[in-house]
Amino acid sequence: MTDSNAKSSGSPDLDAAPGQEPTHENQHAAQESAARHAARTPPPAHEKPEPQHLRDLFDNATFEHHYQPDSTIVLHGDRVQAMYLIVSGTVRCCTIDPEGRRQIFRFAQKGAVLGVADIDKWHFTAEAVDHVILRSVAQSTLRQALTANPRLCQELVTRICDLLRKDERQLLSLAHNKAPERLLQFLTDFAAERGASGKSHVALPMCRRDIADHLGLSIETVSRAFSALKNSGQIEMPTFESYRICPPAPVA
Image: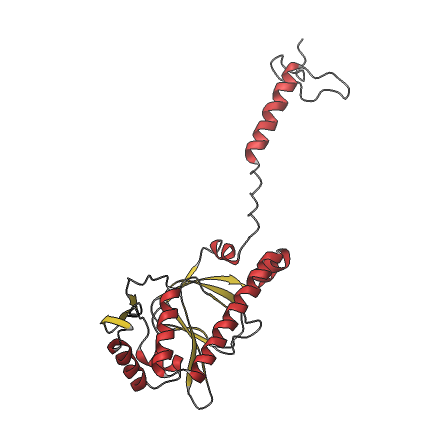
């Protein structure tokens, strides 16, 4: 009589007694089981490379913020929760005194970072001049990256020093230069930041009032300064909203 509990000859003996030599069938079954388990187990996620530049942090940020002209991006006194990279467009950074007078101290363009010198609260108001696209990195992510990589700290210090130099240059211009000189310096710097060559025309996204509040002048004075630069051949303006810096005339 055949034992009903006996295993058929075709069934692998998976319950071999301890110390018993595994059969060929046992080994084959164990290999198949291990292969099935490996297929069900997801491979380990690849670790992201350590960021070498601040730009690398923004490259990992897939979400973009869009702002329409004249909309507010950050407000003076608000809590700083992120740092922003300008992907496209122009941002005016300004402060307003208790009497309501506005001073625009910077027009930030593509590639500029907002928030490198702000720790807890924004010390200025940022507004979109035209259609602006930003990428953001959370403040907590930034702090972790700076702690792990001293190279990022050095880049941050370099950016802050560049901003300080620009602010000092702006203060010197406001204190000593006449209106046409202030305007020409602004137009030259704006074209350089856009990477425009001397032969190409540069679009001015901001209005005359914005330029006046940046240069510490009235709108009427800015208009006269534009006329003076055109009449002297220092700039060329085919339209009201574009210009080109003209090379100086050769000395006879």
